[in-house]
Length: 405
Image (tube, rainbow, N blue to C red; front, side, top):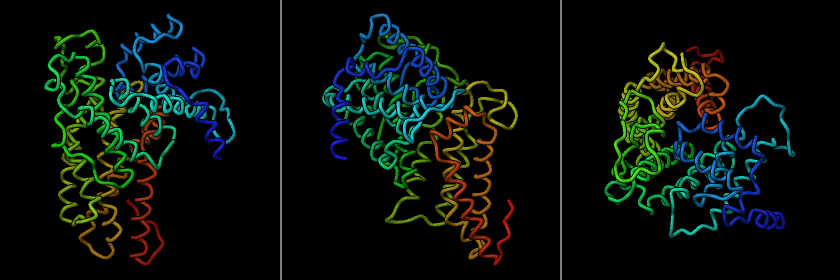
């Protein structure tokens, strides 16, 4: 085993972009995966500016592998890694017990990890943080380093704070271009979301509270509204809050971040623990946040109705990340309903939140369902919670008959 690890280190010894080029697939597959990535992930984690990326990609292809900015090939490989395991209408091929798509994703991820280890920690660029964010997403969708997800997200958060990403970029450097300011806001918001979700999945308190940073949420504009060449503060047409853009998901997430981080901290506070009155207060907070979510569809009850492609995915995740907290906070009390009737509300709240989670997944098409399942653990966690509550209720009633809800 040790000799195999040494061999892998020798294989994945990348120091420059040129060392990473050899890991790229053929052009047809590469372009297909790039399209899949921006189709599925760009409105959720917009750490890569689509127009600038395609400009850099054109330069890379036209100059036979030269890069306009260091780190481009690392970003490209991680984009391919995130999209590689998306479902496709083609026969599955395997390498051992792993699909070829996941095997290739692991190779690309390992190559980028090697490249990242060889980069200076004194001169951190936007590309470095793009790589770190994309690595966390690639780990998640490929089920790689699952046990280290929380530690890796925390390391990325601390590295970003060390570089001042948590500070308002407009105050940090008055000469910074609008493009760099906006990309810093987007990257910081993505890091916040990835770290908070990792804390929830690991059962840990939230690392940061809103008073720990001053970086504002992104501007509600699309990628084509601002370019890399923008110097100072160009005139950009900021869209209304109700208009969906590539930054809408992060903007809406920031509005509920304080409530979500507070819930996670209280639920996982080992020194104090939460009282039932605390749970009821948190329940009101989360339900208020659910009511205040923007409705971009304005069509019917389902968030998917009338929408094409991946539209509605961000809105679904906004609901899921609030509904998951309702399930988590009420399950411990819902299983005690047969002992204390006060907890009947928790049983009802748990079932209602679970029903809404199931409904979101049930009405999603296959592509959306695949992205949700790759990024999140809602279904498995919610199913376990519902089974716990039903089992506890059946025992309390002295019967094995199912509990209806």
